[in-house]
Length: 240
Image 1 (cartoon, rainbow, N blue to C red):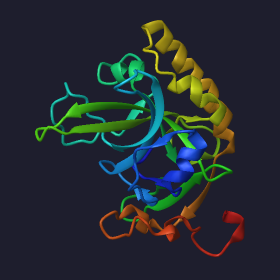
Image 2: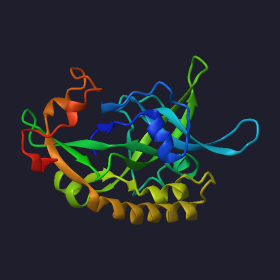
Image 3: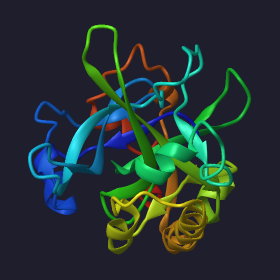
Image 4: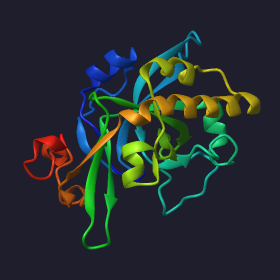
């Protein structure tokens, strides 16, 4: 999966779908989110006073960075489902920091450098729920930063025609199980991987794609809040 995706919903729309409290009041819909951007995630967190778990919509940096990890020049924005439960960088967050990354769709590119073609991949509705992991670390100024990574898998169907990887998408009826706050044992983590594969198999055939203007790849020169970034390239209505 390449590093761009779209979240076109307002915060209130997201909290309504996921039955979550809103801790991201200043969120603005974006049609081109890139690695290291702040993105919305949904996760279960315990209240400090009662210990009760509550589902929240929260901001997170799209660059997974656990406290034990040294500074890296390369953003860690995707994690592979094949190793998310066993790799030392990911497995702790997969056991106890699972989250959902809402999105409307994502972008991939084909072709050679200098003549890249941009493709927008999306579901039949305006919301997809990507499985993710999250972690938090304390920064030098004393504040806490939440960061996230999107889990990817081998691409299928329309997604596989454009790229060999795709996000692990969950049907909405599978989210409660994935976000359950209990820490996973190694055996439970392995079972959760199997669950993600099976559930994402339900979503993969519903993904469609069409070509969009490649300017979306120039993150420094576009307005990420511009909805025309996901308009089909050309005037062919069959591309929608």
